[in-house]
Amino acid sequence: MTPADVLISEVGPRDGLQSVKTTMPTPDKLRWITALHAAGLREIEVGSFVPARLLPQMADAAEVVHHAITLPGLRVMALVPNRRGAEAALAAGVHKITLPVSASEAHSLANVRKTRGQMVDEVREVLALRRERAPGVSVEVGLSTAFGCTLQGSVPEDEVIRLAATLVEAGVDEVGLSDTTGMANPAQVRRLFLRLRAEIGDRAGAAHLHNTRGLGLANCLAAWDVGVRGFDSSQGGLGGCPYAPGASGNVVTEDLVHMFEAMGVRTGVDGAALLAARAVLQQGLPGEPLYGMSVLVADGRH
Image 1 (cartoon, helix red, strand yellow):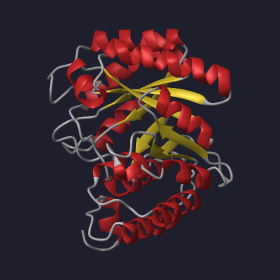
Image 2 (image 1 turned 180 degrees about the vertical axis):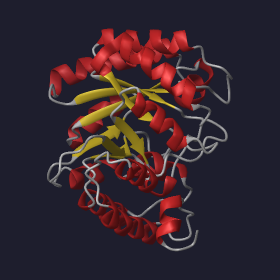
Image 3 (image 1 turned 120 degrees about the vertical axis):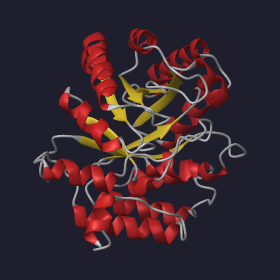
């Protein structure tokens, strides 16, 4: 397989599916993840370990992980909000845990009912659990609402960087920045990722950017320009945050792959196989709208 210049982490099976009302049947999830792997994606966020009463779409997370870890060369990632979720994720066999820590206090309280400081304490508990039970598992924090919050408004950049430094000091492997509400612009993305990389060096993680206001790809390119080489995206643009009003629309994986490959930046993803995976997704969520400009061009509809 050709080595990749960027790592595209597919978050649709978690971030995408938790945001649609329909619950995708487990066999369809497994087929979709298999198809994404066949397309060349090598890191997939396959689910989240949260109470089923809160997110029934994620009730089968352990079963999904059990399938995903059988796919060769795939780094299987799951989101957990706390130690209890981390215990379940580690028991299932994940390779990587990601925790959401909000840069916005208002979003933190709405999303996980904890303050930012309490979430840092949760991260420390998860890190202690990792040391005890699974030292080989990577722990990443995604700083939600790093570029602005629909509940709070502006989020001071100094607070974002200070929070990232605190998390690295606690022992996390990576800290990424998430544009949960789709409020970022390219100048802001460039500035904040430069500051993040200056503060925490190679612990600076992925860019998780949304296309809510049509700037998703422009923001990804801005992050690439300042050295970011990990990008979260969702097939068909599925996803958002149920606790951030108006925060719909992850960056479309198909469009992100097309942009980088057209630039000569290798993604390791096969475009034709990615379209085949999209068809599997559509079969599992019939009637759910999917997005992607490169797909419209390929279909001759634009």
